[in-house]
Length: 380
Image (cartoon, rainbow, N blue to C red; front, side, top):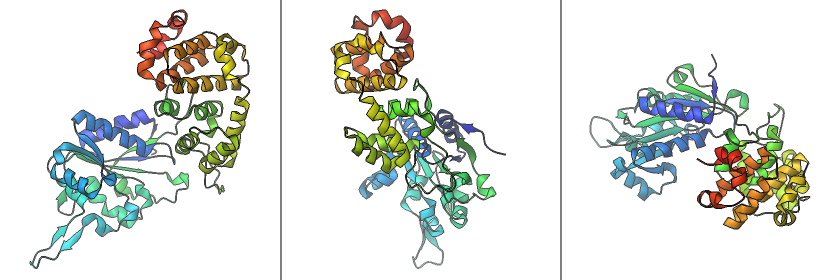
């Protein structure tokens, strides 16, 4: 039977339970929807909870890896082990030729560290089903018995797997049923974006400084966040939550529309990039300087696309100019636009300068007339 799809928050709870019970967990889902990021986020949270320093094992230079080996009780590691890049012998290690009648094994450093007393962390088999079944089989013992050969891993070390589904056309292998039965399972649902950006990808985007132009575009065209790709499609670049995050990084500080379209096309493909650029071109019908000089004019804007353009431009302006007087301008605009746009604008401005927002908002004269309507959305 299929596993019920779950949100990113639900996946985090499942990983927490897996870590508490030492039961290996496997998460499957579409390309680019945050499987690996969610595992990393949870690893960071657990490390803080345990009072340990979080380390990405694969990013550490050799000297730092030996520090973790020598002081395992100080760290919480995330080891990214790509089975598709390994041979079975890479997991178990090599026999030590010590001249004795018995065989001992020199195991990989990552496995040695995971076996040390006091070690805690995740062994993350990302893209596990890209590996052929011969190498998947070599991981059986580690995933279920928590040992490899004669080397056991510590109770505080959890094996986690992740991969794409067969229907995602990612050239993956189906996991053998005995290996599937060695995991508990999650299927991560595809993220969505709503107008309030109060959950799923919209909330993540606001919390992770995704460019406002990308967010407002996807609010208007939510089907382009993660459209279904046709089986016969040959696009090398296509929209996913991950590739839209790439767009955000690529266009930061850029204003030339042709260049923005070219950059976006490299990440999400020509079709989505063309629509994105067309939306930005339409956005230029807003004269921001005029609105800031006369905030009451914001209430005269009727077109839906221009309303989203307005709050995107105002939020971006405040992000670059987070001063008390400028927040007053934002509040004046919120007082004359529709509630749903005011809420979104307030959430964005708060996300950009949280401490300044909390310090200033209650002392501003424009806050009092709108506070009863909006404080529950932005004041904790």
